[in-house]
Length: 242
Ligand code: GAR
Image 1 (cartoon, rainbow, N blue to C red):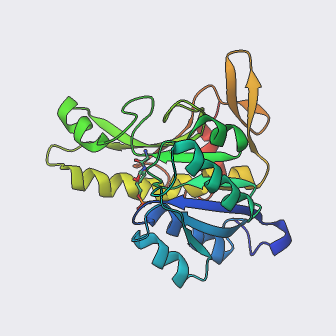
Image 2: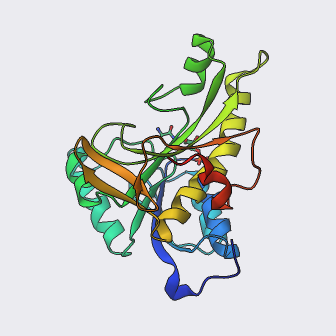
């Protein structure tokens, strides 16, 4: 990407985390460097002890914690979360290891403006323990996916995926580490496309669909871990766009 982006041209975003926040950090560092045209307005966690909160604070990003305890149900929590987010006026909500299922009203409120990253090649292995399930199934390939959020858990339209080989000696930990390295490439890429107005969610005949550069994505953009190293260069990653 080119040089620094003027603040007025940066897309305001909010990032939701529950834990370490390495994806949040990858995004925030690129924003700070001027490689990603976004302004991280706030990092919100549902866990007060999420290590990512300290990381964000150290980078000068406002942080908030909203615990589920005390709310009568999921919808009440989500309503408070939506209000908190809206007060920062984000144009994109970035779920980065936010380990809560969102209620339909919350998803509807930010329809087309919310993305998630998931540690598997969706639609394989939605939900938890993806690395364990890949090893148990004996899969030869694994990876990560970025998708728009819809009401279906880990089921919204796919945007970009990164693929890695599974090695004979792999463990959950080694897979997690290699998948995360790829996550740190593909999430900033998807956000960059959105921030530059190249990516959107549009209604289609079979439901909503992700569109990139004016064309529906029949398949997610695929980045091979053995392939191009610099995913921040969108022309390299978009070679497989159909
Ligand atoms: C990431 O691997 C992300 O894909 C996963 O949580 C991790 C968060 O890591 N998300 C999910 O499993 C959501 N279904 P991080 O806190 O270091 O970014």
